[in-house]
Image 1: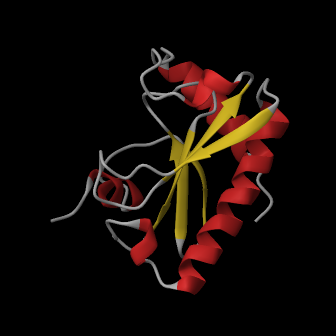
Image 2: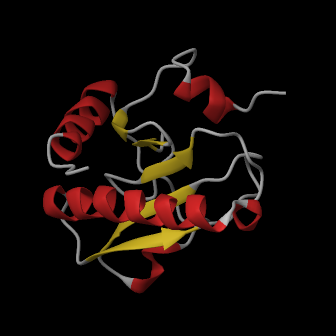
Length: 132
């Protein structure tokens, strides 16, 4: 069964796309911990990150690093935090979260509410800075 992320990658569900190449796709999280919170996923549907072959895992991290650099350049933050939880959607995904404080990567924190226009503006700013 296809996951929501596979449907996003295929364009069946709209998203605020940040970047993509032939293997990976990055888009804004619609329930963000901070402005610019982005998800990076492999285009191949795979439930658990450590089931990825070594080359794909390494390439995923390199792709995420490039997206993280664009997020940091455009969002008001000190660092980009990274989290891989993998319990909510059975499709490998890496959370890239702009951080100002240690507690900003706590997923029980209230989510940031953004309008469609704000999501689009953030996605455009970050997307324009990604150097793949």
